[in-house]
Image (cartoon, rainbow, N blue to C red; front, side, top):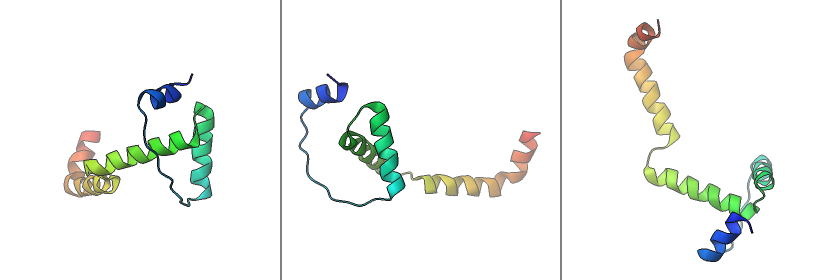
Length: 85
């Protein structure tokens, strides 16, 4: 029995249908992940959505991180150059 199947038996989750469209490369990447891990597309998609939601709920997006980094470079450029020597 696969781990995911055991978890599903011990912790039943109510699933609802979702109809959506995505770019072909995204779907292909998900299919490759599912195949390489011996998991269903549903399990991989569910995990990806849960991780996305968790990241969003923490409130720090990668854009905010990149903006902060950019501002830091502007503010401390000379210091970073000196430290890099």
